[in-house]
Length: 352
Image (cartoon, rainbow, N blue to C red; front, side, top):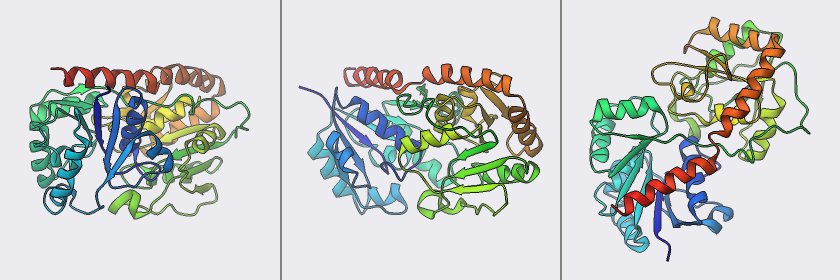
């Protein structure tokens, strides 16, 4: 008889961020070992429901408070009905806090990258104190959890689906396209890339994403209409996204901060050199080596961003070498490898 795993994630694909994709990828890949249930605010697609059992609570603001008060009985009923052997919370808030008093062994994966305000910090401290094991996808966030909350965190990186994100030889590649994939927000550096587009009118800049409130909250920005900027609607299908990576010449992700961003790995798996940002709170550096798979620049360094893009676009021979290295590096983060690490951890925590 298989053990029961409850995975808590606020959203389900396709309308979600990287943390929710990670939660789903783990749940999907562990479904052959565990009876997997998901606690979420989404109904889930037919494909998702064919693999795991989905339990929903209403979507609401002030999630840690709301689900610990108004919807407390509903959450408690789900916990009772599922009777999980282990719980895996994705994001400290809300689920790490909401499920903090569950007697079931509990793992919290901290995907948060921004510094919390004082209220969120209070909830996070309580949640992390009650976790049996804490994981984070990046080295810097593990160090942050230890220094700011006094808890040891195990670093397990996010994975990439290399069976989807790969070099597609039947896709025609453009020779002058810089591709950005992500939400149109300030912290993602979308406006910094706009400034790079102004400085490099000879290249096309494709922005794939969304600034809709459901995706970006209050940080959404509007991408201006420039002759060399093309806006591409949000692509929920990952096969279509892989095809888009393959159409680009290079990819650029000038975020202010990231935990362990999936877009860089996806682009690398598709054989694209990447320009991304470095810094004390930026997970690109965990898997992208400057001068090997791409170029790392400081956040908000417009000149550095422009110079890096120009260099990669003009130096095809070096770009070819970066692309070869990128594919090799991304293969080390294949989801089959990462999911195995999570499966081993879950087994260890259950049988302590």
